[in-house]
Image (cartoon, rainbow, N blue to C red; front, side, top):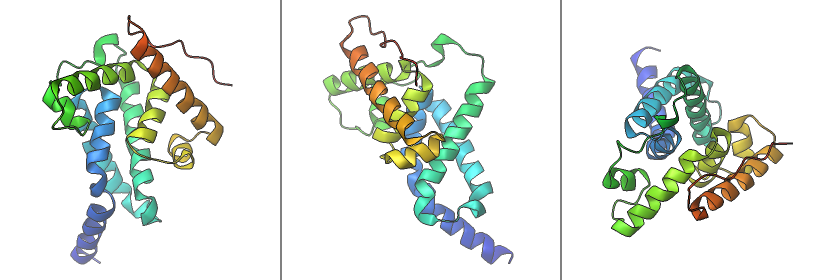
Length: 186
């Protein structure tokens, strides 16, 4: 069971988990607001996923499974840090790095500026709305998959996504760049 089992586990891990590395990183950048923090988040996520890999019973669910781990690691790390309003800074991302993180390496300067504006507005969203928006639009998950990852009812996912989009839209049209007030969830 020794090295052959280990090699087989590593191959399966590469095929089922590491294929999602780019999407994990993009989501990490958007969650943390920092390329360096995203790298740390993804690294810790991969370490956790490898440790827990034997618990993945359905390989077709690997993407949702690893995103659930990413979320768990992010929330744990966010809870350990002192909340600072300027923590979600874009200073460490230049236009090219931002474009790469958003999957737009060849973006024009106008497109890069627009992407940066969207990114700033996304970072201002409260975490529950931001992570729902990212899972839907970056991760490409279904409502049901997001409900599983976020451990909330399907209706909550739909409500959060609706509100997140509305807050984002309002923030992008508000000249002061303030997000719309958050309505309490029912």
